[in-house]
Length: 211
Image (cartoon, rainbow, N blue to C red; front, side, top):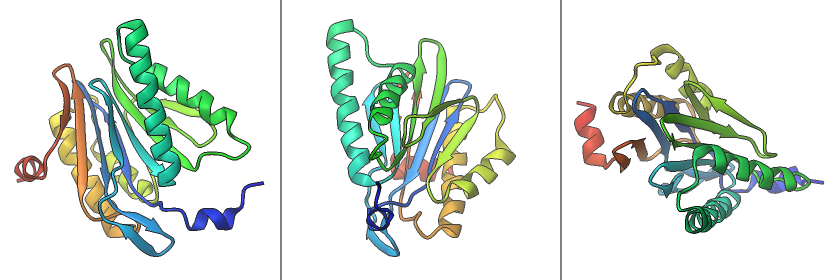
């Protein structure tokens, strides 16, 4: 049986966002990690580059999430060597879903978002702690500040949105979440994946876009 008191002291708390765009996907997250009411880090990494066409955001227990990131990267390397092509969002989601389902007796305390390119398709998947997942056609958000972020995204989303436009909206959604959720805060990290490749926006680039 899972000890709920144990989970109260795990480093957690965040807001992550993923948006399906006309030319790719855009994903973002804050950098604050908390343990109950204590801010344990202002430099937590919550978006990971899996391959040039695939990224993953994490929310929940940091240790659980980082283990799954390492496992997925290893599987991607093995798959690429054997199949001569990297994992897609669909195949990576199926793999993680099986791993999480097999461990549901003592589940990984995570909520994951996988996003990227699958041939000509732009895909975002939201995965829960026991392996359930949904393919999102527009956008998604996870973590303690997700309700605030989702409210903002509902008001601005259009199917024609580009990744460059989405970067601005993700920054805005995270800024709003930071104002209302104490477990979301500090800096913002945003990435995009298009046919041109994987792009990790610097602080300076985001400031220029937001002017």
